[in-house]
View 1: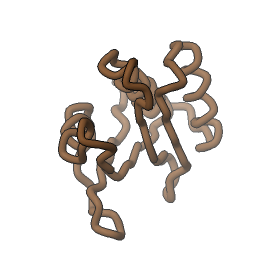
View 2 (view 1 turned 45 degrees about the vertical axis):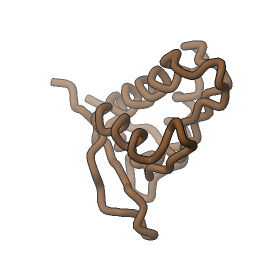
View 3 (view 1 turned 60 degrees about the horizontal axis):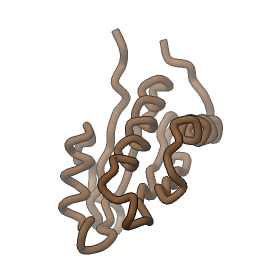
View 4 (view 1 turned 120 degrees about the vertical axis):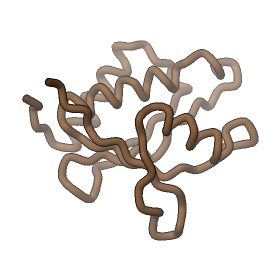
Length: 122
């Protein structure tokens, strides 16, 4: 059974796990509480260092987030924004879809929105 925690406690626990996993500070992860209960918004996950690109740090950060969301029955919602020519919107959307996100209703301004519901353990 999942332990229910506040969105603020969720974000704090994510930051602790991220630090314990030694994910470098060049991996920027911005989270905000969702508009509905048990939802978190992934505003950004971005590798800001060309030197650290391709080392799997962003994927590890996302795996920590997903694991935490499953543990506490949280949905993760995001809007796909292309970051640059290497990480354009299509490539980024494909990455998230491969990580278990599905298409949600478009955002208010028509941007592509994705959501991942928690996977309940049996």
